[in-house]
Amino acid sequence: MLAGEMYLAMDPALVAARQSAKRLCADFNHHAGEAHIESSILEELFGYPTDAYFEPPFFCDYGKYIRLGHRVYANHNLVILDCNWVTIGDDVMMGPNVVISAATHPVDPTERISGRELAFPITIGNRVWIGASVTILPGVEIGDNTTIGAGSVVNRSIPANVVAAGNPCRVLRHLEAP
Image (cartoon, rainbow, N blue to C red; front, side, top):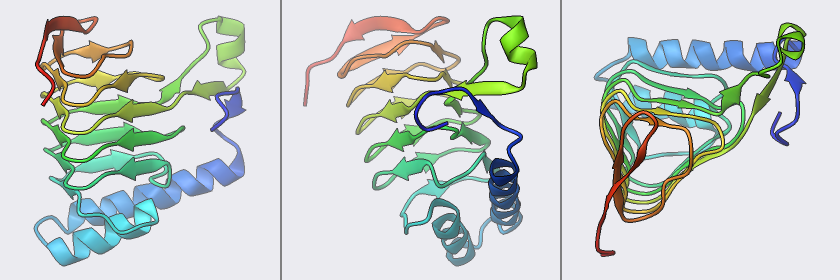
């Protein structure tokens, strides 16, 4: 799965890992507003301490394949399908209803019905703003200091220091590097 090769999502070990993550997400969402409890749940889910602040609800597949920088903020209803590494840099802010999906499926229907899936890593740089209802697809990299406009579908990598938006997401203008 992490190698970007076909895998069976229904493998018992993967199912158990997803069930564990779903229980932790449910706990996190249930304890909204209890910062000390939320923080310990996220630490257990990710496997390391974090100063990230997620407005509930938050959902992910595994948790352990998410790497967060410092001061990451996500508004309500963040979904991360971390079937491969999802790396989010420092000072990243996300609007509500953002979906970050490393998961994908074969285009060939015969392969697809076999139950095998694919996943590719996603990397989001430092000081990135991701607007409301953005979907980030497998294999995408977003460079530092970039803003992704609300409602965008990011299906290819976006460079640093730009404003990008649309479906598909494309660069609208370049910014001066800080």
